Length: 70
Image 1 (cartoon, rainbow, N blue to C red):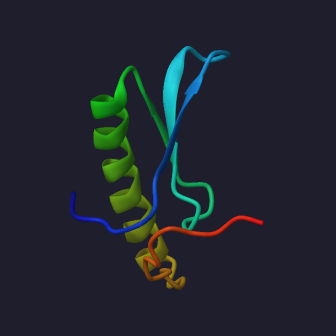
Image 2: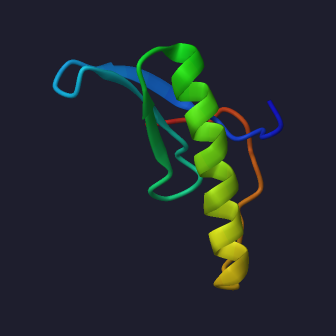
């Protein structure tokens, strides 16, 4: 794994897939049929998110590791 962003993975009964979200990258989500698939897919989406941010000259958040939620 090349990225250090926190990834939250959960099962969606509604969509019948695993969902991965990257809280530090707004809107960065992927799905997959199993854990391995969803992790591969989110890595691609993270790359695309970062590339799009660079093209649009937007700030790219630094990975902070585990985030705290109150």
